[in-house]
Length: 236
Image (cartoon, rainbow, N blue to C red; front, top):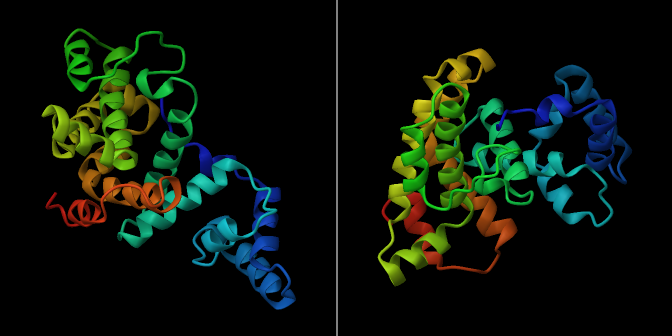
């Protein structure tokens, strides 16, 4: 299952690496970053608008991938007016998890059954209960957000060639999946019921933020710029 764990994994060495990155070749900037760390914790550095450009520009940065994914997502969300660190943590964890092996098509790391189409997930949701119900519902949300966020041009191309559903269908299904997952006893037990409700509520904004990550950092130069604009304003 996807749980927001990246921020909790950051330690003092990560924080000091950020200080060095923000203050590289400038003692006064390093001192300022250290002071902000001491006063506001690592979040004060993670939210620094200079951090992402520094991470992307410096060729010898050795920070762990989870930090980069978190910063990419966090800054894309802030740009869209979503200032919730738990949500950024959840999305970054989702991207890291789904980038590993066949995890994007499975409801959990140990699951063997794979789901390519949302309709198959919905069918299984009618049969699942308990923990399976939570995993199936949350995966419906996760998979929909992953597809619409990182691969919107693929969805649009499939719609044009085969008459497949548009990203709006995936957005609606993903929102419903997160909302249903939030109502399970498992979500309450794990303490993520409120987070999943927030993710469901803000699904469109989260999709657009992941579109930014995809367009700018993963598939730069690909796709249709007009289509991207329409997606951002909700008219595509």
